[in-house]
Image (cartoon, rainbow, N blue to C red; front, side, top):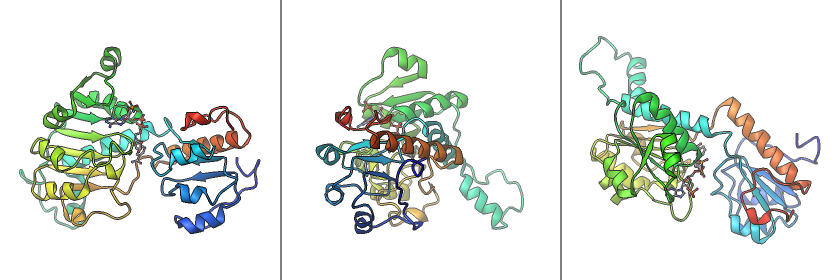
Length: 309
Ligand code: NAP
């Protein structure tokens, strides 16, 4: 789509470019289609004087300094909605895998240890009728909540702004203040964006407030959880388990985390299906083409740039 309307340069390597490589390769571009692994900060923007739009191929845009873009009259777009259900599905896959010890069970079979059915073999915990706590009831959080009905799980949520009674009824969810949710939920799933308010939203204090035997699921962004504190809680069996798709310093994983059998770990694959990644790519291409043509950008993040392109 882009090549048919623009002169296009594609990163030729199957890896993330370093900041200096990106600055050199993109020094004279008008538009940049990037991934969440590309850090777009003021220093980089200063080396790209022609830039008019940054189209992130992700819904989260914590990799981009939005204020620095707006200051330079650069539009920023993201890819919301098209990945909502896919990410909600992975969240449930992780929740189920953690509670029913699927990864351990798979390994057990492959290692030839399955000699006989046994009454105490790989006992997990029930999911149905347990309380699901959702932190951040936006697009993905709501999609996770909708799926809970199939498992007969009551859903409580915490959000910055409480939903209307109508919306709560529609989603069959009950609001709780943050600390109450931490104390009450058997499974806690995080769906907030990463920003200065949500960094380490779940740290030592919050982990201590969680029910002994609760599970933490994170498919939002790694730094929302203090990973060191989480490793300690898992090591002490303060929690029954954690299931993580994202990491504080990804692709690095906190020391000790990969040793924990009560941690289920996936490599940031929340939206990784053929269908969804295709939809995201098309959406990002539409965003960048609109921006370059001076048209309304369908998924503009910095609304201040509306009508300014
Ligand atoms: P969204 O619709 O914007 O939902 C985020 C929700 O979090 C909003 O309802 C927001 O409320 C709420 N929120 C913000 N700050 C909060 C706080 N301090 N406490 C409680 N709630 C807070 O975004 P989404 O489409 O659901 O995506 C959520 C995040 O998931 C993305 O930002 C991204 O980082 C992550 N994600 C990860 C993957 C993956 O591959 N693992 C895939 C897709 C998305 P307000 O609207 O009132 O601010």
